[in-house]
Length: 102
Image (cartoon, rainbow, N blue to C red; front, side, top):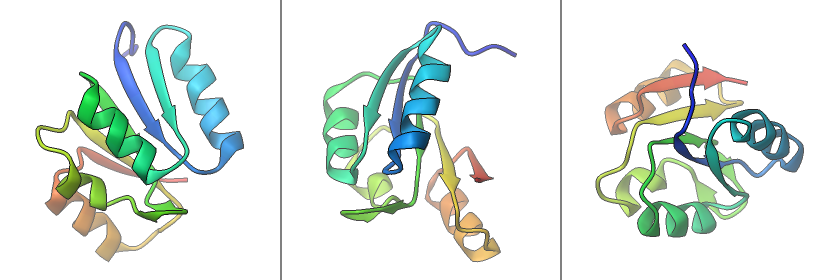
């Protein structure tokens, strides 16, 4: 399955990962990169999106905050270094579509 012609928000504080994801998904989609939770929340609030890739460990807060801060979120896929069942279950209970360990 190919992801094309979508509007995607990528919230990731690791600039190397953010650039790689932006380049990969940006070939056939419109990508909105954000390196902080605050920037991600602002973009998600003001932009019609088709999906979000969300890191949990961000310099200005816990990525899970996004679920409380923005109403009517599109599908969210969590990308995280946190490899714990508790974190995964929390993500799914908050509304994440999937949880991928980096």
